[in-house]
Length: 330
Image (tube, rainbow, N blue to C red):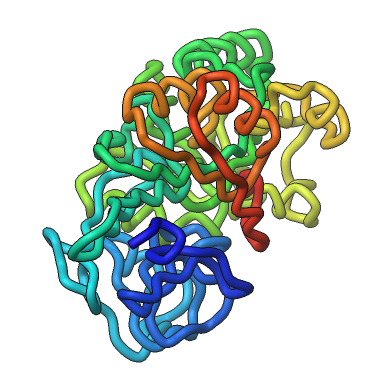
């Protein structure tokens, strides 16, 4: 059986005929396998959903407990139709997983979902899974993207807080994954006092704490006078009246895209923090070298750059050109 007979793109997303399931479909389908809880990969309305326990919990928090008719926790190798599937840590956010798919006879395909090779204090590290076909993202799939160590960015945050002790530091971070990672990184960098969080982050932060992830003292950023020097909020909050309660704040934003200074200027970001939960160029190319697959498929992102690199390395590669997936949720 050829790889494209095991898995191929459709308008709804990647479909596996021998297993009769979709991976991260962008619209409701009878059976979905979900890599992680970000909204561009995990949607409500499917008939049956299989994912890690943490991803199922996150989907229930975000969409309500009736987000699918049935759900199944992915534990160990499982038979789905005429295929065997298994879930492996992706290092992206809490509960994120790569999905390995293999029929009884045929190549093994690993769908990475979104992934990161850098240590992340709020989730399990990426697990390299040997495979014949590696399906990868290319969010930052250009040589210009080489992200710094997050500890270096936290040092910049601390330096700014020391330079401007009377100005609250408001940092934008995506509500699921990035916000909790930023809080954990701030703690590791030595910020021990209370960190204020926007109400939109509360339930997801609570869930991370329930899962044993230490985030320290968190207080709501809802009072007129918020007694915290560091405030974390989703990007949407910065366009709302909420932000007006802070006097002369330092506006920051945590994203891999903050390496592009024009994006920071467009957002009016004074303190851009380059903290990404995706592989950058050195990580994605090193991962492909490490796995040494027979073929690489690219789901979304800067496909042409990675295609060209694979060509120069003598690795067959093809773009899947999947739609409906953000470059990086913000």
